[in-house]
Image 1: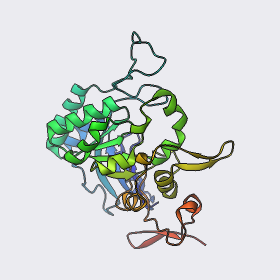
Image 2 (image 1 turned 60 degrees about the vertical axis):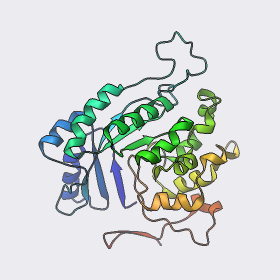
Image 3 (image 1 turned 180 degrees about the horizontal axis):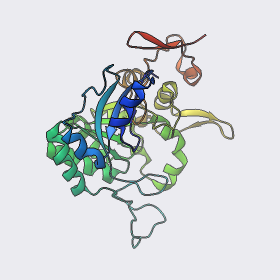
Image 4 (image 1 turned 45 degrees about the vertical axis):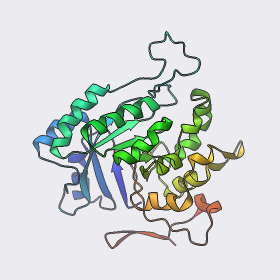
Length: 296
């Protein structure tokens, strides 16, 4: 790994320059800010892309906003109720943790000051609402996860210039729970090829430590949707619509490959074949012309 996008819920803008100054200089770091730090960033006149320390290793990243929950907890905000939850339940379709009007308020403050949004949206209702708000503001923001998307919304990613920051290995980890909680909707879940063909800019990552910080794993999960499990042998997940073409998967990692806390080195797999991606070794990593790690 040669770089990360830091979405830790902390004062990343202050902490990362201090870490680099103390000798932690093996990574490029794009920091995020959370809503409680937005006012301070605006007061300091920080903009997304600004360099935050003398060596140029730390740059100002986006405003991170989490507008819904997760699939496993049935709190991802969806258009349809979760199976087994009655219509009289308090949140049958999941939870809007940051309601649309609050997201609008945050973006009204951030965007005029040059701070780009990166919005966590997992359920299809959450993704629709975020796309609507990006359209209102005329901003080509970033949606983190985009795990379940309405069929009519895939093309809106391209129309609006929105980046889908996705974690391919999550499709492997969550395949069984998706079959339960999103029954009848999984053709639209983790649909990387549909996002790509809709014009989204894809960025691959891990959401580490949720999934391993390993770009080979992301590309393998994206292109094959299968892995060997100790208890179940080779298991697959998703339809062909969920898998981008291999050349696209390599590009989506190489040109940025960043989501949540991970950005990787340029993957090369010439002659190795995609059947061995999860086992490929790394020869070494370079940062600004400097070796930061060398293999045997």
